[in-house]
Length: 217
Picture 1 (tube, rainbow, N blue to C red):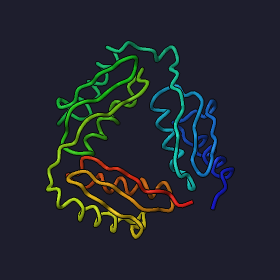
Picture 2 (cartoon, one colour):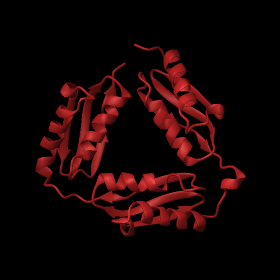
Picture 3 (cartoon, rainbow, N blue to C red):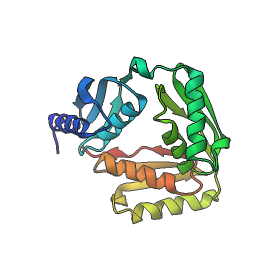
């Protein structure tokens, strides 16, 4: 098992290696495998990339992202400008369902609202607006419509977990309540936990995943 000090060093190395992150003003601390990121980044996308980089490191059991997005003067923009660019980004990248999504911006915080056909559509919408200049944060409240009978969901998720080459599903339990899913059990790494979460979300009909899987110490 990696020590907290080893995890800290590896996270710092990963942050320095990632070309989308300027780790100059980022401080990393680790306690019992849980990483805390503090300091300053210069865009929301950089804040998101820093968190993703930390999650990629073996031995990380959780991440607390306390990074502050402090935009440089050149990136400061009004809410209407941000909203217009976000709408245009959605129309350009997601023309099939962009009109089902509403954009609300307040003090640089961008909120996505509406209903789309799948969880992947929901993720794509957040991805489309993440790099809009001037955005300080993205709150994704878009809902995914269910198109699969609830009774089929449990079986489909269990089968998906068994098929995955990236995780051992033996210690994962799936509970389904209608279109909402609860995952329980233990895995060996944060990457495995994420893969289980993604496998559940990829299942048609799932509208919510409560991931209670823990990473073994």
